[in-house]
Image (cartoon, rainbow, N blue to C red; front, side, top):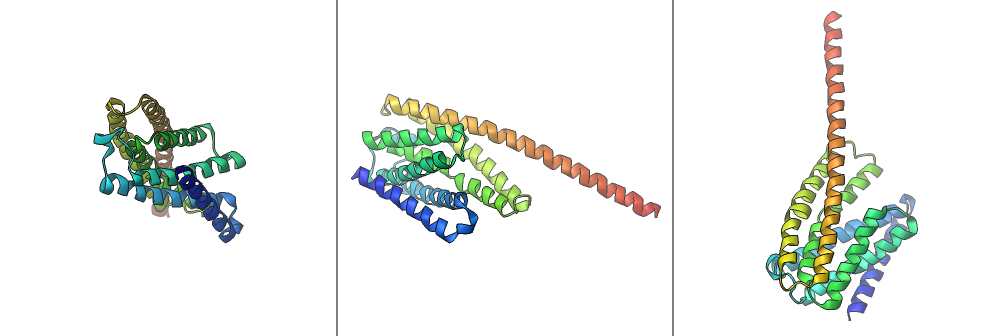
Length: 240
């Protein structure tokens, strides 16, 4: 049953990709893959959000417990997507080692949770935290492709992405990580997996901080240049 669920998920994401390829043939294959990624991000955040906050239980208090049926379904849906995206990235060489390591770690972690039948709670929590920023990341890429990134909308997307990543993935993620490694129910292998994924989150956070500093400096330099230009125009206007 588990294998069937993952297989159906994989086929479903692949069929959605083919549909996007047919609909947006003029845009290229990466456009279609990004749409699949965006769709997965929205769907899995809604699904895991329901699992965590409505169906329960919360991973902060029940780390290492047996998987519920809905947790298993959520993990199977997500695993099928990661299999699809990992294969796509390897075939088209679009991602670097860091993102491939993230995908590989996610696949191993989800597989372990499904095969052992435990820790689905915190695994869904980790998926929710890591995927909640994904739609913004894809929106940023689409804005670049459409020539709309250098605008107020692009700045708003970047700001929201940074805030969400820092507060949810790193901030709340730290609390979840602590609950997982201190829980007597969580197996050692899941704790080690949690350490690896938590370390990756901090690597991403450092990259984001560098990007934030670089963009802030560029914005400040542009503001200075515009300010000097306005002052020069005022001086020229008075002299005339």
